[in-house]
Amino acid sequence: MPKNFPRPNDTEADHEERVEKTIRNMESAEFAAEFAEGKELEAIKAKNKRRENALRGTHPETDRK
Image (tube, rainbow, N blue to C red; front, side, top):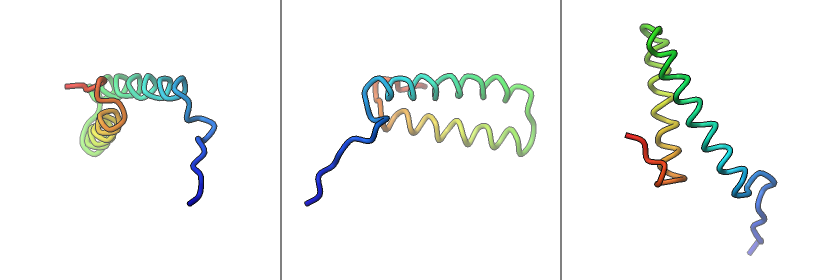
């Protein structure tokens, strides 16, 4: 059985930084969505939904509603 070694960016500090960056990106996208229409708006909504799902999967306490 191979041993699992953490990747270089798998530290807790890196994880927190990625979560914070994802949240900032979601907030920026929500702002951009106010001015978007059609396919662009749908793409922003879909990407934010994926970001939300990723946050829920990795950090339940960051559950955004």
